[in-house]
Image (tube, rainbow, N blue to C red; front, side, top):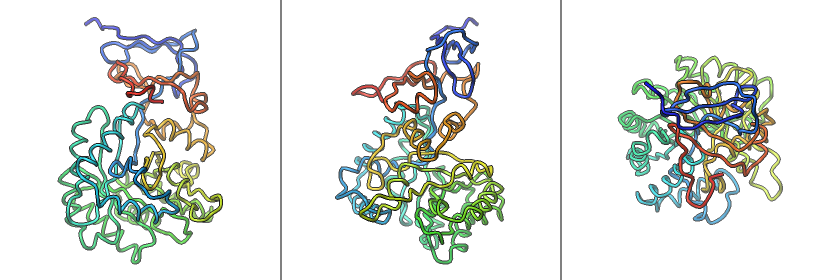
Length: 387
């Protein structure tokens, strides 16, 4: 059957490939990729994946009484605001987040949802409905976020509901008593209900925080490789280097994924004094990759009590990760845009940046872009270019 050519690009740079290329799109697919003698066609990257956000909290920053001075301060402010949430409020804010992410080129996202008791949160129901409505635009998965100490009271009910709705079981872990036993309880629930796990762990600068260690040990013991994710792990940034290297080697053996969250961690960590923060709390991402740990860079909180800035723009999150982590962009793009890149016969889903290279895209915060889905450009957000 004759293919219907939709668009052609000439002299583009393809992320992950040297040289310049001509692209032909036909019938919603990448029909041809051929070497080009031309230049100046812009940069093409895969779509983004945002592995850690909080759509239930998003766009509440203007309701906060102050800028948070610490993690605990942010928790207290958000808890006060959450008491007034309604279905319409959550839906409106989450929709705005999904729309921003979609316009900026995010195709997949994982949102955590606070879960404080046996009853299913309103936000879980609202976001489950949105996940169905947005499938194919932003594929949204949900992870419950429950304080570790509550699992002894409500763990079975939470796990049962999460499993029934296709979610992920998650816990907030930081300096808990009886840590190993409580971590084992969460793993036991996950095994019993066939659930993946996603932990907020050691989100602070206490060198004695050992939640990550306990999770690694339990994942190794139960052989749950590939089904355990850890976000934050800020305490690793100040522990002895040799100790961290050994631990990251065990994490790689356990198959644990580590999510690096540069924006929120740099904003909240070491922020409880009047002076300039010295410690930024970014987990050792270079060391983790060198050890073989699978990792990603993600947005975390966007315009709420934990982090009052952001726009669900993974290009900006990547730019910040490059800056704070001293990264080579070409070697780290897969932390925000995983996958093989464009191939012939694949769906024509990509981002076309008006930049000569990945380095130039990172250098220009206002770099214009067009997001292509199924061989067609998507409409920009009302109000101008989504960049």
